[in-house]
Image (cartoon, rainbow, N blue to C red; front, side, top):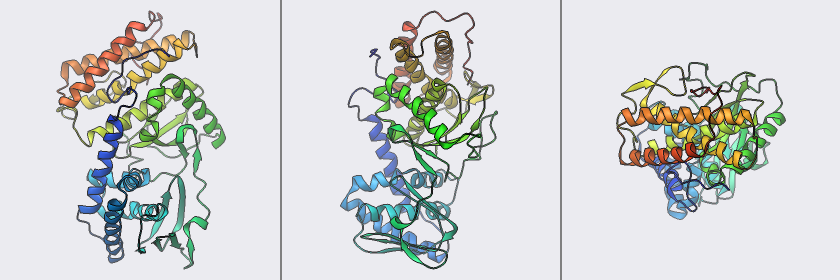
Length: 403
């Protein structure tokens, strides 16, 4: 394996606890918001919220690790982080997160008494399984032995005995392909070439997506094994958003760490790049809940090394942070003789050129916090190492990332 220098939040050294510690702190932030923030709403919801808060407090005292793991599930922390960011109100966030949290506490054996949730339930997600209800279920009873759901017709049945929704499809590395999306921000779009993230298989079968993404994940594991080991903490689900034969698009959200929207593509390398790219966004987005990273991240704007529109300085950092490990992936795959040829050489040169320009912009304009200085310094060192390893760029290599 080609030796590369470790880099903060990019290529972890063996046993590096940094990223797991960041994830844990964000889960604690979610717990604080759930337990302490005032919330309004109808009486049934407020009763459920009160019971949920008592149950969470008891569960955290009993088994803090298991409780925090539940809080890191995508369908739980996404609405709560949207609430933390002021993008949804507390009632909406708790109505979305509460049933899954209570069912998860019951499944983990973390309840010592029944807890009732008497508010309409559209979905429950527990341990990689999903149940959806249309019309909404009436209520959920979280019991020490498991959860029961009161269906729209009034029947009460154990959740585990109900057929799960066929929307979650396994991929390697514990990731799931999902044709269900609970992200309330999914249709809010910042990219000039996209109009939101509507679920769309693009005319292909789920099995085609699984095969393509599975091969891409195998490339990632082969090229970035140290990064791949942390993948379960940075990527939980991939949502399909169509097929574009000429370009590839992807997206993620600060408030939904672990969720990536991807179009399908014929190149497995392109898909592997997108997986690394969006999971890197999750990693940096998680850090920003704890540290601003750049003091002028959203107050100063500049030309982007990867996009046609003006971007805030934080957008440039997000791009560089995403594509430096992509360059590392290229170097490792080339060293292993995988995908060798002019196409890889061309793409490798494009990415390195884009990273060099992005790092130059950041050196000139960014005002990093101490954590940001560490991040930028180690990104620069890894980029310099990768640039020194690279062959001369082909004459037709674009100086800008065709992202």
